[in-house]
Amino acid sequence: MSFSRNTLARRIAATLAAGSCAVLAFTGCGVSDSSATAAGESQASAVLDEKAPLHDLLPQKIKDKGVLTVATQPDFEPANFTPAGETGIQGYNVDLMESMAKKLGIPIKWEKVPFDQILIGMQSGKFDAAIAGMTDRKQRQEQVDFIDYQWAGTVFMVQKGNPRGITSAVDGACGLKIGDVKGSDAKRLVDMMAAACIAAGKTPTELISFPNSSDKNLAVTSGRIDAIFWPDMAVSVILRETGDKLESLPVDFEDKVYLGMTFNKAQTDLRDAFLSALKAIHEDGTYDEVLKKWDVEVINLDAPGINLAKK
Image 1: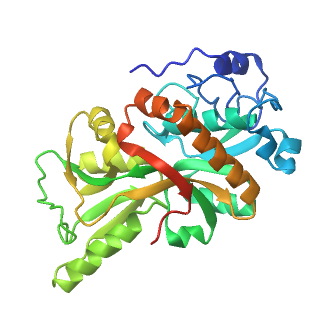
Image 2: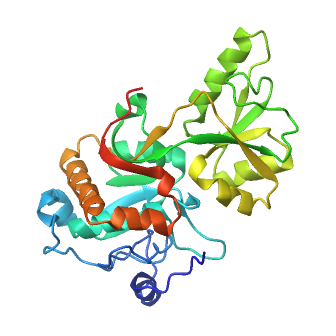
C-alpha cells in the first residue's frame, strides 16, 4: 500500500509559512486521502463550515476558537503514524477523526505528543480531544471521558521460533521481560502475569517501558527484551517492519478491550457532538470505508458509546 497522499491538505501546507503546531487541513471529502502536516509546518488554513450537518452541536467555545486541537502519538501503523522520510500524520485514526470533523464543520490542528502526556494534556485543557489507540479503563475514566469506537485484541510478539518458550498463559513468561510504551495499558497485564508467577513460586515477569513503539520493537528483535504486547489487527505491519524476525502467539488471559478517543470531562457537549458524528459516519458507510481502506475490519465496533469499559 502506498502512503503518499497528493491531496488538498498537502498542497495548502506547502504554500503556508511555518507555524508552531501539527495541522490537518479540512478537506470536505468522504474517506479522506489527506494527511496531517507535521508539527512546525503550518497553522490550520480551513474555516468553520456552518452548513455542515452537525455543526450546531458544537459548543460555542469551540465555534469561537475556530479549530479543534487533537493530540496523538504518530508512531503506530496503521492507526496513527508518520512514514519514514515524511512529516505528515496518516492512519485510520486520522481518517476517522477527519470524517467526524467534516460532519461537524470544524478544521483540526494536530499535536504530536508522547503517549504518556496525552491524559495530562487532556485534563489541563491543552487539547480538545485525543485519538491514539488508548484503552478505555475505569481508572482512566476518572481522568477523561472516552468515546469508544473500536475493539482491540492482544497478542505477544516474540522472536522467531519463540526461543524463550513463552506460552499464552498468564504465568507463561515468568522471569522474562515484556516491553511496551510508557503510559500504555501493559502495566496492568504484566502485574497480572507477575502475580501469577509469584503464586506459582516463580520469578515474576518484568515490564520494561520505552518512549515509543519503534524502540520497543527494536528491543524485542535484538533480544534485549523477550516479548512485547501487540494489537491483533496490526501483526502484519510489525512483521513487515521487523523483517519477519518475529512471530505472534495469543494472550489467553486478556479479553478484547475498547479503544477510545478521549475528551476533557468538563467538555461533555463536545464529547456528545463527536459521538453524534461517529454515529453519522457509521450510518453513511464512511466508517466501514476507512476500516477497509486500512485493512483493519477486525476492529469494527458496531455500537460505539461513552465509557463502555466496566473494569
